[in-house]
Length: 418
Image (cartoon, rainbow, N blue to C red):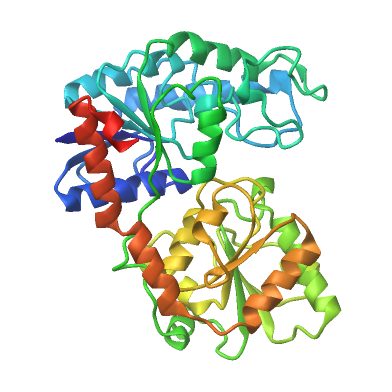
């Protein structure tokens, strides 16, 4: 069975890393998995990229997108993708001749909305955010929720939005070009599954939840002191870890809440034994903003260093304000490191009880500070945390679930899985 995963990249970005991990897991499982990307960062021979001309066209198209989205004035800070420019990828798909096309993150003008409607092979769409069933936005406007539940119209637009309603324009294009297309939707979190089922665009499509996978031979519990020595981190301090793509600059990652929470900890009590470690950013003002000594490790790409970093930490904090199923939490839990996160998106799937960390019920700096302090004082049960990760998100388990899905789709027997 030949599977073709479509994603803008294989390694750059959380969705890309999740898609690539699934691709590798499926090859280990015995499936003939391939990826087609614009931005190839790995040396994997089964990851295919577009020609230089096609790649250049996509880069130019993405630059044009950035200019066009300026005509919509919106307080929603999330990325907006138009997917209006044809890429010619359909020819690549037909040349590879997959049995199933598995869509992932298609931003950056990788594939136009019209082209998605022209794919002839059976389609599985693994959704990593809300773009597929929203307008142009990858996450809905937090100040004006629920627009995706009904057709985008002038009546249900946020009054704070002005200019061209690109969200509505993109939504109507999806509705037109996908009206006859069959999608088999996979959501990595139960939260996103609930959103899809409430959406006007996808509620009639078959939907199921399959978690993202992780390689537990790479991400596993290690000796904490050895990990800290390897990374040059102090052995006698409590280390709070935070990190993500554009970790300190993307407002959706909630870094400002972490800053305020750590400052609250510093002011409330003596926090001289607590230090902050940040990856995904090479520098910043955290030491001044929080009063804590801060170690900036920059962007880390190799799995071994990331695994050592999670093991070196006492707690990983993800103060995201919008998220589907955080790769960083998946990685941290596989290493047996407890996590703290706001109770949003798919976080409750990853932290079902206090055995695995703390879910903060309200988006509040004081509540976040209390959760961090609680986790730093709590005995660490690395093996229990890692065992649940292995049971829920092992490569073999997730690849097996996708394999059964593909088989049922090809047999036109999807109803047996839903």
